[in-house]
Length: 120
Image 1 (cartoon, rainbow, N blue to C red):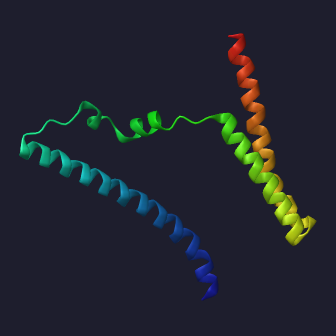
Image 2: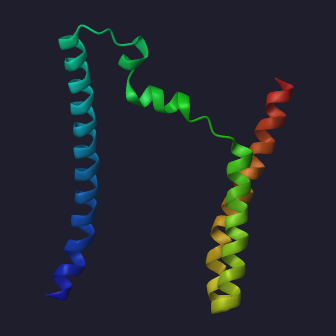
Image 3: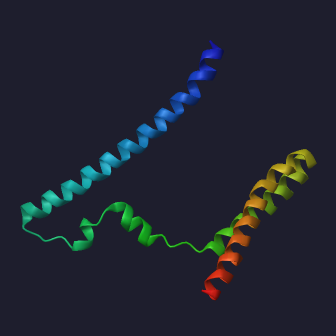
């Protein structure tokens, strides 16, 4: 029985995640359509921004700073490495190096792109 659960749980989790995302999208669209219907019933005009696709609005609102993201990842890596080293030992501290090196890669990419933007 445990062998079957070991196989079924990861697959069912993946299906469940896709299902939750799909249901959330349907509910968001349904509530948006209800707002449109109520506005039509009451004779109100909705602003033009209301009809822009949700993904486009989400991209416009979420402008990220790559320098800030890289420094946060670096800090997370350093903190995780130190915490794992002090509490669990050197073997486990190596797992904290993963976000540390990801942050270093992001920081390197930031400075390379910054220099490239200046030369263009």
